[in-house]
Image (cartoon, rainbow, N blue to C red; front, side):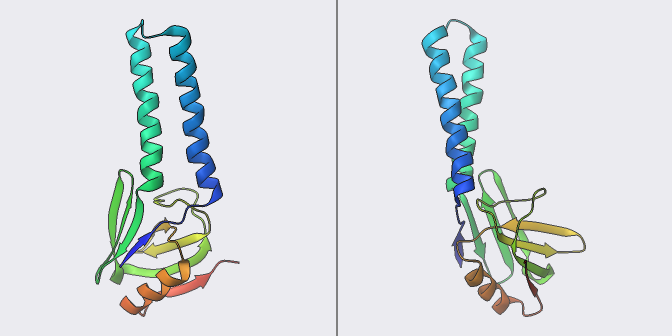
Amino acid sequence: MKFKSRKDFFMKGMTFGTSIFLMVILFIRILTEGYSQLGFVFLDLIILTTIGLLVWIYVGTAYELTSTELKYKSGPLSGAVKIEKITEIIVGGTLWSGVKPATALKGLLIKFGKYDEIYISPETNATFVEKIKTLNKNIKITEKK
């Protein structure tokens, strides 16, 4: 079963705010300086690549539950977690560092293995938790307060 990632106002603001800011810088630089120096062309490519990466992450974040794995993809970041190794899911939490293929706050913090964790933000936390519980009944579900 496939799940799209929820996109909240914070992520929309970060993605489109940063992209617009970088595009304005690029536009002003081209109008004032032109393409007279190779260094500026290189800088322009970095700016365009950054914008492309932000948009790719924004539109390309999704999750898939198979019978054995939770697969995730967020721009260039992708991977899988064996469902049998998942020990706990914290609903409504947020991970501020680590693996975070998510585009919203208050998603699901998935703990697996001994110390590993990943943060995802499916469109509806409840539907995702319900589906994964059918695949592994031993997963502990904790509500974040």
